[in-house]
Image 1 (cartoon, rainbow, N blue to C red):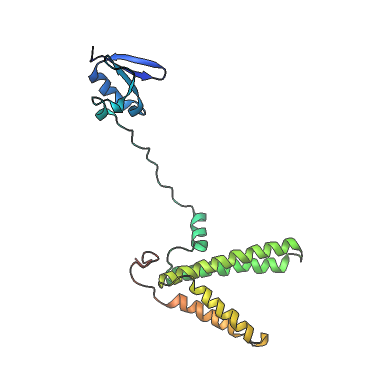
Image 2: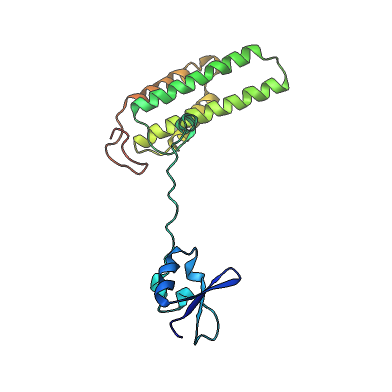
Length: 204
C-alpha cells in the first residue's frame, strides 16, 4: 500500500497512482511543488516538495519568453532630444543642435501669430521650457563625451549672468559671441576614446 499515491486536484483527490506514475505527472502540473500528495502511512496531506521521493521531480515551468520591444521612432526622438544620460559624439551633437534650431521655428511663428493673452503666453512659456531642456540635454551629452559633467553648463551660464550685471545693456553683443564659441567648441573637439564614466565611446 505504501506505493499507492494520491494527489490533490482542487478540492478533489486523483489516484490511486504508483510512485512512478506520480513522478511522471508532477512535472506537468502547474505549481507542482505546492501540490498536496498522500499515501498510506502519512498522517495528513503533504506538499510534494516536502516528500523526498517526489522533490526531485517537482519542476517549475520556465518563464514565458517575451521578445524585447524595440523603441518607436517617437521614443527614439524624445530620448535623443530630452535624455540627459549617455554620450554624444560630434555628429550626434550637430544633429541634436539642428533639432533645437527646428524647435525654435514654430516658437517664432507662435510668437508672431498668437494674440497677446494669457493662453498664448502659457503656450509660449511651455515651448520655451521644452526648447531649453532639449538644448541642455544635447549639450550635456556632448560634455559627457568629453568626460565632463553637465554641471559645467551651470558654471557657463553663471558667468553669463554675472557679466550681465556688470555690462551695460547696449554693450551686450558679447552674449551671442560667447554662445557661438561654446557651440563651435562642443561641436568640434574630439571626445574621450573608449569607455568613460558616462558610458561607451559613441564612435565605437
